[in-house]
Image 1 (cartoon, one colour):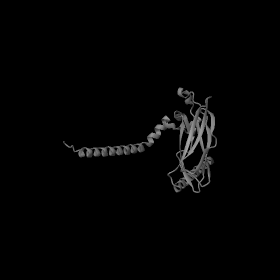
Image 2 (image 1 turned 90 degrees about the vertical axis):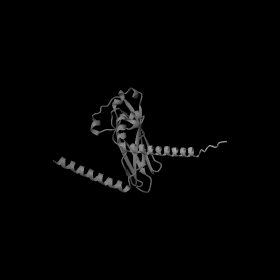
Image 3 (image 1 turned 120 degrees about the vertical axis):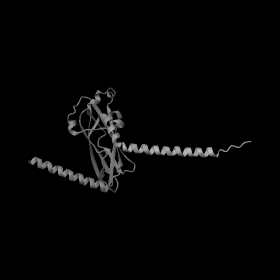
Image 4 (image 1 turned 30 degrees about the horizontal axis):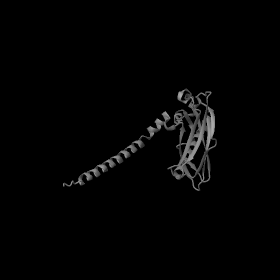
Length: 218
């Protein structure tokens, strides 16, 4: 009887498996690096298309030129916090009914329940996602560092409108409710850096106010 030595194929299989695993790891890392490098492009894509429920950014002056049409739309407000963030976070009102093109101001409220200052940052989305391209925010607190002292409460306004062009879309004819949802996470920005940013912003606003007063005197 002839014995077959299977040790070499086995070793080759192990080498091949190792190569496959290595190649997979390299591909994952490469894709991750590409995704990281493409973040600005991805955000631009989302803003233009409304992909993933991304809303649009609107200039206040441009928003003044948007006409109001006689079609009601209900806008609901949702609030969430990450489990590690010791905050209370909620909208002051759960729902409003507005005309398309009508500007609306609502407030979210956050309270720091901990005994130390915390810096948070909010992400958001709109559902249904297809409505994101028509949902325009003039003022918002998303993707900015939000600093709250221990036990303190902060009001955060959102100014928005729903583009009347949504009424021209056949797929949107039956839609009567949009939900705007925010989720707060703990920011990677340190408390010290957040305070520094606040002081710089306050100095800029004070300078702008002084310039405005000087111009009014002229």
